[in-house]
Length: 432
Image 1: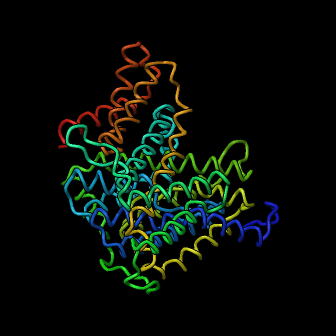
Image 2 (image 1 turned 45 degrees about the vertical axis):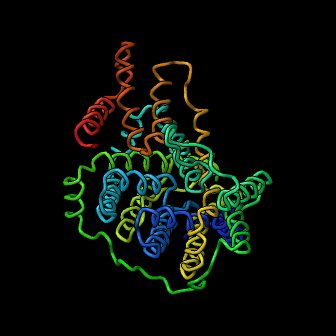
Image 3 (image 1 turned 30 degrees about the vertical axis):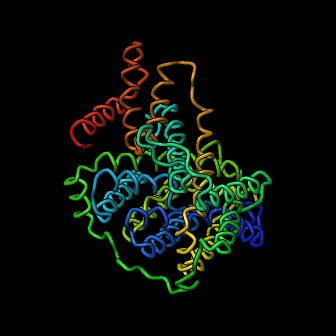
């Protein structure tokens, strides 16, 4: 089924690769519910939904595409969901999950057509790289703010926090531990860093296990979204078009970039083309749609999958191993809940993941101003407006304007002009 001999691998190698990937990715089980619960989603709901979305997406990827790629809630999109969508639109989280559900359905439809590849080709490369870099700054800023390293200021809006505060001190200790482990190339550095920081928090009285460690998985809110028609009506009634479009674009870029990079790393690209691309995108979209039904933000192919590929993973058996380990983790919600309740334990992961994503800046053409400025606008506006959608909108509006000014209008795909008009309308008439 998994073509182990054809891909020159073994069951043992695939299982070890899966364990390696799990250790690298396990921090998501702690960080994602923490971010969503910070926005009002019940922790156990977000925790169980995170597990379910990861299981569905990863198993779909394993069985339908046979790639060693893990599908899980995307860092950055969860922060956008929690702090921008819910924070600026002032809506219930169930309405916001309707937007995620609609995004998953649209992405699923695109996965079955050629329009997906046309849409990706239409977006300027500089804007693609800028979106990833901007999201990196955004989630790093969230990590700094949640931990208290960056604090509110009445005049300057933000300032340096109080380093004598136990929460800030613990975050700094955790950050130092994690970056040292990363520097030493320790597999699962972020997860191990959280465990060590958690131990320090426990012995210093900042971490308490009042609800025990093990419990049966449960969904206190049941199924959050289940009616496609109602979800579409929610998007229309609350003007969430920009939210859906932003989710869709980022999912396209994240999944496409991660898929191509990891599959190339595994030596599975044939003639620089991705076989079973439709199946791979189907796995991501079904993970997003079902995840939204139970209560989590959009999923994407994770870059952490590259750790398993580096350990020898080449087939879907790697993903199945990860899925089994995530299923076991589902029984430890009290433990994960206690860890996520201490911001200093999870904040270092957000800060470091942001540094991974900012590296896309090096791919941007900074020499041509008409290319550089729209990308710059995307990067700075995401953290400063606390919105991925705003950053994407400003980039898409400024790009065609500058190309028109330089009489390079033919270099701009017609879809970009359409996006620019839609984003401008959204910022003026919908975003309040």
